Amino acid sequence: METKKQHRADIESLRVPLVFLGAFIIGSIVTMSFAYKEPLYLVKNNQGLQMKDNIPIEFIVEEKIIENDVPIIQPIEMPQPIIEPTELSKTKDNVDEDEKLIVKVDPIIIVEPIIDKPIAPIVIYPDLEAEFPGGLVAMKKFMGEETKYPEYSQTVGDQGKVFVEFVVNTDGSIEQIKVIRGVSKELDAEAMRVVRKMPKWKPAQVNGENVRTRCRIPFNFGFRN
Image (cartoon, rainbow, N blue to C red):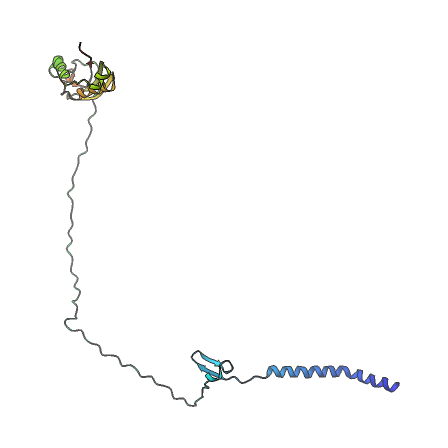
């Protein structure tokens, strides 16, 4: 029994060194396998250098290394002679000529400002009243000849007096015509039309000078029995 126990004890004492020895051997084998490199063969093709293993055998053409390669000299193209332009192809020299400047000046028209004359005041009670040329009789005659009774007013029976007011200026012209009392649209319009056709009146006067004044005249529209 003692001999068997002693033999087992010897084996146990050798286990650790054997384990380290096996690990060393395995590590060496792995290291050598990674350290081993297969020689690479490069092949030149249209796309540059490639590894030999990646190209099919039928397309592999090994490039031979030639010592003391002679450089290839490419021929130099000789420049073509310059053909001088003929007389027909010669262009005229650019000659700068001073252009004649024509300046058009529009005539300056000076327009004098129109200064409105102050409007004379309207005199209500002048020394001498404004008058139709020829007097009252001439005015009644003018009104009778020019006034037309509107047909519509006759149909509907419109009648009455239309009072028209206007201003006689210092030169006898008439302005600011308006109806101050009317009868109908048609009769009022007819009375104003007749006043607009009147000739220039004789202006009113104050101290012998012409003044502006207002005048009122009636238009009598009615049916005769």
